[in-house]
Each structure stands twice: as C-alpha cells, then as structure tokens.
Length: 404
Image (tube, rainbow, N blue to C red):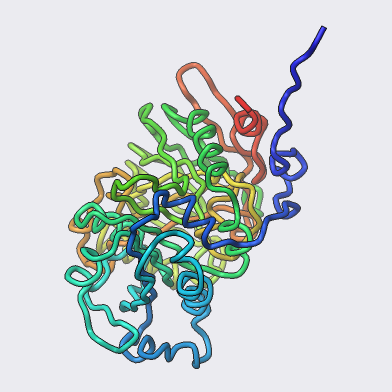
C-alpha cells in the first residue's frame, strides 16, 4: 500500500523561525531576479530611478551626492539600482533607459510630489511632462514614502512602478532578496484567513499594568493585500518590501498607546474612527500639547485610515517599510487612504502638509514600552486570536501552512 508524501513546508515556515525570524537565512540580493519577478513582463519597458534631496538640482548633477557625507538611501539607489541596471540589468531584462532623476524631498509620508525634477546633467524637467508619460517602470527610492501620490499618477499616465523608501543594507539582503511569488502566495493565504472580518480588537499592555483596548469596525469588508507583484501592463505601484494584509476601518473606538519621535509616550483616545486627544504617559508634555493642537486645528489628521498586519518572516531593519511587513506586528495609520481604496482625500485636509498617510507601527523594537498582549478577530460567530505578545498565534501559522 503506497502513501502520498506530504510536501515539506518552506524552511522559513518552520515554527522556530516563524517565532524567531532573525534566524532565517536569505539568498543574495539579485536586482534582475527582483525586477523580473515583480514586473513580469519587462521586455520592451523603459525604466528610470527617482531619488530625493532637499537640494536636488545641485546634488544630482554629475552625481555630486556620491562625494558628500550622508545620503545612504540615495547611494544605495545608485549602487544597487542605477548601476545594477546599467551594468547588466537592462540587457538581462530586455529594458531600456535606466536614467536617474531627483525630485525635492517631501518631508512627509505620502505627500504629493512637486512637479520639479532634475536629471544628472542638471537640467530642470517636469515629472508630469518628462517622466510619467515617458517611462513604463518608475522605481522611487526616497526618504519618505511616495506610494499614494505615485499610485494616483500611475493611474493617470499608465505606468507601473515601485516605492522603496528607507532602503538600507538589511532590506536589500532580506526583504528584497526573497521570492515574491512566495510572498504573494503567503499574503493571499493570510488575506483569506482575515477577509470579511467584522471587527478587530487589540489589547495593549503598558508598563504600569494598564491594559488599553482599541476596537476597529471593518463591516465584513474584503481584506486587501500588499504582495509585491505588478504583473502584466495594468498601471500599479508596488510597495517594496511587500507583505501585508490591510483594511480601511469603517469605525474605531477605544484607546491605544503612542510612542512619539522624541520618545514621549502617550495614550490616544479614539471615537468615531478619529483620534480626539492625546494624554501623557511619560516624556515631554509639549509633544502631547503639540499633537492635541494639531488635532484641534485639523481634525482630519486624526482619522484612522488603515489597519495592517505583516505577513513576512523578516528581520528588523530599522525602517518601517520592512518592519511593518514582519509577521506578528500590526500597524494603524492616520490620514489619507485614497491609495488604499478609502475615502480620505488630500483635499479634505486644512493644509497640504497635513495630508500625509502616517503609519503607527507596533513592534518590539519600535515600541518596547508596551506589549501587544493579544489581537482578536471577530467574523460572524467565529472569534480567532491572531497575535499574542508580538508573535503570530496558531491561527495565522496554520493559515500559512494551509494548502501546501
């Protein structure tokens, strides 16, 4: 009597690695493999690389930034993407172009880009006139995320592309070195495990013993995924590294903690999907006061526009673009959500500089002062635990293994 062998799970789905992703090993970064997988087909495509500076006209001319201190993101873009394309990537992928351009840094996540752009000869050009209509693939390696504005421009002008803000060596050697067919398949498995959820509850345990609970109403909507693949010729922008399942909340209430950039810790009160006030746990009261003043001046800045869950087994990189994709983490985001299919548009904010999409990541390295004790999903009569203590619960681990 013969038996059918059960296929072995990929090594990264071993439970020891799922619970300790820093133990995962990765292949070497391969630009041709990354672009060929993400953007199939590439044959006949014209590609360019966009970077950002505060003084783009001076720093992009003759690649002057390479001779200055700093600019690690832009130097990685030059070394691994621009030179990678020029030296062998274009021929291997059947693409043309490969030029590098620089735009002015937005200093805000997902703020619209100014139209001004410069080439490496120092010529002043227009994104709308000279770049968007003339390239099939646009790779934006920038300081701040440009996913929302480039998604809108891609639909308008018909190009595909990727945003890779915060690019560093850890990301290159892990989140961009993986097989994106596997990333996409894993994201879909977890999307199916979460889709049509009625609500999500998150319990946050503070150091003083308090437990805060945030409730997010999802109204049974279809979960969406960021999975990295931009196949075919349909205009789209991939956020790389990819690997998350996300929702646009229909409602939200409760409380959750916040760690500000200066280290100040606060508690945020949420009603009717909006953050209405912040109160101090520890740190600088002036930081809390400034946030409350911003909420009072432009209440749209407190609107919760996203709830996301990481789906990849990745190490911490120190950059949110990868770290929010780590399995066992979750994030909320405030502000515009039009690029996610939501109803919060840049035009609804009092000031242009307020129309950001800002992720609030909950992860051990990012928020060590509080713990995600538990994340629960309710879907009809079903209730499932998704995360406990920043680790995927059995329900998510089983979902990743399903159907293999």
